[in-house]
Length: 394
Image (cartoon, rainbow, N blue to C red):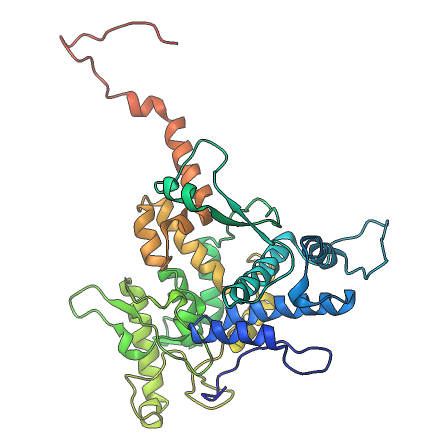
């Protein structure tokens, strides 16, 4: 792109961009959509146009049955005229297939709004809802109807978000850097330890942590230290999801570790190497690549792979930086922090997202409270006379 940032498009069999796909992807870019979302949608549209090519279909004349055929093709990979009777694992999981279908339908919705007549009715107009629950403005929808996709994928039941225990997080941090009481100094990479401690202590996404600048970190000077999550451009494309600013208070231990890290940066000459240290990124290269340049996400995942090998058997296999975020949210909810507060701290656009992700946590807490009903009712007293009343119940 002109600003040197990377983006994605879809190429046809002639190795040229597919115009219809590129128009939609450019619309997403202009709207400021996350590069990762553009990448995901481009992958979905690449599969869609590959399917159209294999089956000899025109993109602007597809029918409902052919959209259904796309789902079968995603699962099996079978071409036209091929029907396999041998059981075999699907090429993609149902969640992935649902995401791919959503991207294709969104692209078609974009072109419909631009006046492109598409063959077949891929959406229907629904004037009523099944079940007893009715939204607040259901009476408005009944007059005009609600557009609903005809072809849908039943998503599998959401499983509990994976987490790390406090002991496992400490093992990861200790593998990066440890405090030598004898030498009164840190041994290892304080930068790496700071990253894991920050993710576990704040619930930040990896991209949000890598986007932090020193001016965003407000150390405690008699007050509670805090960091600011500020949406801004990053040379490696990481960003604040949703583009919403938020302020997060942090603990003193994390703040002291940051102070040690800054001291090491200054000793290494970072203040002289960058024009404006306050505007420099917190997490930077210290060895490979350009020194003091912003740390790349790929480099972080390289560190994760090394830790996988080093800590095999001590922590869950396949853990990722995002597990730290799930662990932070789970710890807050188990501690009794209200869901809406946790949602704001995590930067979720809607509290329902928090409820969907961590429903198992709140359910467990509620079930545990109900199970201990004897303790809850121990303090109940009769309303009058100081004498307990007796009666029957059903």
